[in-house]
Image 1 (cartoon, rainbow, N blue to C red):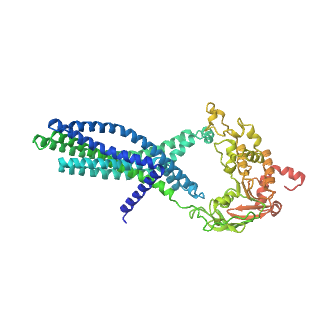
Image 2 (image 1 turned 30 degrees about the vertical axis):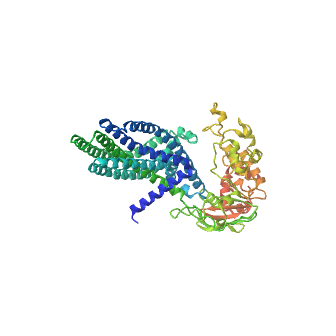
Image 3 (image 1 turned 90 degrees about the vertical axis):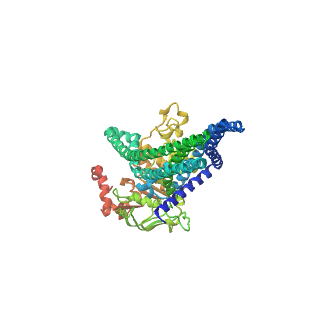
Length: 613
């Protein structure tokens, strides 16, 4: 199949998908809109013929004049009323389709198991266009399709009428419309291509705009005087996008102006011919009336048809991005024969290698590691050693490039990711702070408990944040945001509370601890941002909570991991050494050097007491 044929097939497929969405979203609205479209399309033709009958009756003997006049008035009344009804049905239909389309898009996005697509700029550009398409494009495709149908019905009615009066003019009018249709389709392709080309530009513009209005960025922007710099970059991206739009608009202006002159010339020549025929006695006043209305309506309808076809074509191209996202297969292959994880079992990494793509360096290089059931294993190492990547593999956000990870002897690739993650309690180093209430921020850790205040409070107590939350203006029901406010605080929008970094850290810990029946806890820098007293308290609580539970602890503060059953040192993606604190300290390897660097402030005390760290 040729590229043009394949393109036509794709557009027809997209059109069919959009119409199916409309039918699935609101079938009765679609049927009503169809009926009104047909009636609206037929009304101008009926009006023109009724007008001809009335005019011919007034200049001759015709006993149907009054009947035609009454019907003409009735059709006129319906013609005035139908646009309002169509507008209402179109709006309702558009809302119904948009709701269904957006829901389906995010159902698809939520179904992505891993993280790789969310770190791919090309996918993010496509997703942005898909989000735009989900809000309005399917409804506009349905509207455009019905607009085309309306124009076709009107054109056919008037072409048949015009052919009765002058076949030659009919052919000329239709011929003049062909270049318009071809030009509009070509321009629509250019518009759709433009949207794809400037998507990265507009995404950067949005990024700069969000930075300028972001509360977290506001401090540094004002401290370092970055506002004008970011505004300048945002403006530069907008100017780049505007320039590309302007070039296409100029091209469109020139083409459409030339085509309008051709249409006007065709209509003028036809009108002269019709008047000449009437003067020669081969036509009537009604014929001239019909001719004027028919030519104007055919040209208007053909122009509308071309514009609707081009607009719908453009929307179909945009809708293609939505369908491309919706039709994406799994980012991580689901297990062919799903298996259940055992309640107890060691976790083993067997010769695990990982890199994000063939163009990226290796992050993990042949890691062999066993995390015994019920033990606490600590991962330490410099930034970039591969610690957080190893956590992502354990959560199955990615799969090893080679090698495998096993839980109780079962390969994690044979376990549905959802089932695996239910068995994990995780605090990420880059934890989220949600613009929700305090109770909701904790309850998100286990949605089955989001309305269970007793469990939420118990998790907050274990994380040492209960007293902090209770002192908030509305306790656990306090909105932790200055971006949104609760409906009960609409008249007092300053009641939202912004927590400190350490307080958010404890809240994120409470969120993870809400899963009190999880089999493995992963704590990635759980005390980052805490003061010394809070850090000591948190680690004391975590030691109690880790008892009898498999735990993986990652921390740059080596004093926080010294009581782990096993300490593993990562260097450049490889395990440099492993053992408990005393073994590694005596070995005088990388761990001992890092520990001594952090203990510099206490050396005098150590030397004076003669005690080992």
